[in-house]
Image 1: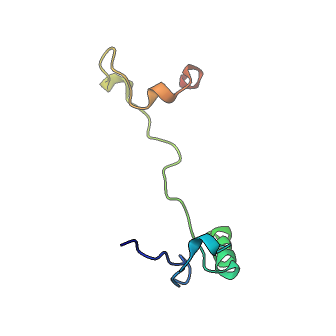
Image 2: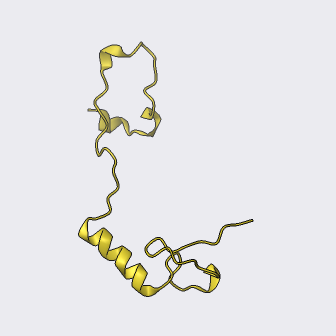
Length: 77
């Protein structure tokens, strides 16, 4: 059985998400409360902004750095 979704702000169950214009919130008020919490800095995405530097001496010749295939070679200077 699929669990009925609930509002992330007030936890009120949302019986019919397809007819709720504010989904995933139960009302426009809860949508605005959530927006204000983001705006006020109460919510935050906790992630390191810059990865730690890679120690080039620890790499073996020909070893591929994980994630390096996504880098632009001009960014490595």
